[in-house]
Amino acid sequence: MSQKDKHIQSAVQRALGNEGLSRRDFLRLSGGGALLAGAASSGLLYPGAARAVPTNARIVIVGAGAAGLSCATRLSRELDGAQITLIDRREEHYYQPGFTLVGTGVWGVAKTTDKNSRYIPSGVSWIQDMVAEYDPDNNRVITDDGRTVEYDYLMVATGLQINYTDIEGMSTDLIGQRGVGCVYDRPDHAQRTWGVIDHFVDNGGVGLFTRPPGAIKCAGAPLKVTMLTESRMKERGTRDRAEMHYLPPGAGLFSQPDADDFLSKHFPERGIEIHWDHPLRAIDPDAKTATFATPLGDETLDYDFIHVVPPMSAPDSLRESELAAQEAPFQGWLEVDRHTLQHNRYPNVFGAGDINGVPIGKTAASVKSQVPVAVENMIQAIQGRENSARYDGYTSCPLITELGKAILVEFDYDLNMKPSFPFISPYEEHWVPWVMKDRLLLAAYRAMLRGRI
Amino acid sequence: MAFSFVGILAVVLEFFRGWLWVLVPLVILDLVLLGLFFKRTVGRRRKFSLPFKSSLGFGVFTFVMALITLPGITRSSWEMLSGAVDYLALIGASVGFGVLFAILSFPVMLHLVGIGAKVKPEQQATRQTPPPAQKDSPTEPQGTAEPQQSQG
Ligand SMILES: Cc1cc2nc3c(=O)[nH]c(=O)nc-3n(C[C@H](O)[C@H](O)[C@H](O)COP(=O)(O)OP(=O)(O)OC[C@H]3O[C@@H](n4cnc5c(N)ncnc54)[C@H](O)[C@@H]3O)c2cc1C
Image (tube, rainbow over the protein chains, first blue to last red):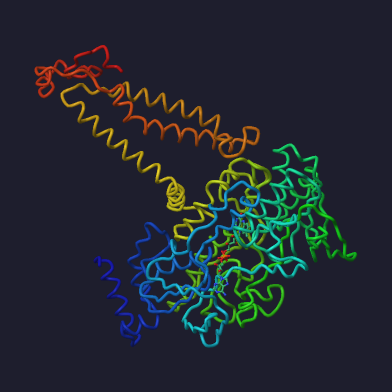
């Protein structure tokens, strides 16, 4: 301990003495002696991170996806003595932003599959099971196997659930067959989707590209699949063999107005017809027809290829729990304050990633911005301090318009553009964002899992 | 989303993590070659100028090749490039490759063109205690057996 640290420690002890508290009382009450740790902050490698805060808090993280692993790494680095438990049955780790590239034949599937164990820090216990029930009144979760895990602090990072059965006639077995594609959820879905897209690119016909109503992860993905498929056709010289239709559920293509404007003009310029207000209701894979619930009634269209994007929601176990928001607009999602990411009713519960009931931002880029906030605020709660970190809604989408170029769209809750690199225009197609998406973002994602960014 | 310097470094390191299986053996090979070079040139003249120029040439060649081929290698094309940011990024990346290849090829060049003739015993002695007159000559290495080659 340096001379400076010793001074601070004795000052703290004197202050505690004045309040009638022993040093031990203080450490216990604060859950950590943050002042001592903060005083000796190293902060060299991880700016903003104080030296580990001592605590014996029991922390449970549900979900070992992008957000769960990043939280585990940061919490285990920033806390000393905490019992951190990660719950997730899945052993593989999926790099989901790569699925659009796998589904359009740009990447091989292997690039998107990794192992969770490579990123779980030592000292963090991993329960390979799923949480079946949340009991926040008793500070515990119950897993599928009936195991009860108690916590002092809970980080919910379960991502979301894809509701295939909400589309009549749809099942995951269909993906890759009879012209049905869906790049969501799993690498093998994306791989099988490339099989049918490849066939469509060669043979042409009618291509329908859908998007469901409500919040979905990476709202840019359905658009990217459409544009990359079209780009593939141009590349192979088969564009004139296909009729392409994009069918959004409402009257917009993208939540950020400038990007929406661009796409609304760009799609027709490329011969992709937009059918507003066309949420997909059902498919008949034998007849190769799709039915859309339009405001004027059901409309059935024939297809040779259809990209089905099912509606998404919070996983059932969360949706049916006390932790879910009870009212619109985020009903069923984790009820957190949109800036602090702390639960509105259970202050020892925090959320990170797709599960959060916040206006925008179900992307890995949002995870990168949310995790430091959720972690910092949780640590401050452990210390009994007022939380101070704020999430501004940052999200990003490298909107691939063609093989070889993209627009880097980054924005916040106010839908204002927030470019990370001011020299890259968010209004124009460039090669640089394409290279970022194709070559660099996987490295950035892994650095995020390791809590380096 | 601001990236700190450490953040960018972390991403770069993570990017190269996938290439370590190529880079590490290459760097080790280079170090071994460098060590061998010094071993092989005991009692011989060491020439650095010509190897330096050769690897510089190799670097320039790599730079030009990268400039031409990088868009294609990234599954894009020259037609897709638009605006200063794309061209500057392409030039920057090509310079990076050029420098990398120049550095990696330097030990090889040392072996190919950097080993001079044997130094005569009296010249070796001279090397240890150089006469003041020779010290003044900035370009002429001492104990040179083949002065005309010293410029590489
Ligand atoms: C096709 C596609 C393209 C995308 N493109 C981009 C892009 O270009 N840019 C971008 O930034 N983002 C993109 N994303 C979004 C990004 O991948 C997600 O936003 C990000 O992975 C969310 O992280 P998460 O941790 O919240 O959820 P996930 O990464 O999905 O992880 C959730 C984890 O929780 C576990 N889990 C679920 N329920 C339970 C339970 N009850 N108990 C225990 N564990 C549970 C799951 O097994 C899973 O491991 C894309 C996603 C897809 C599908």
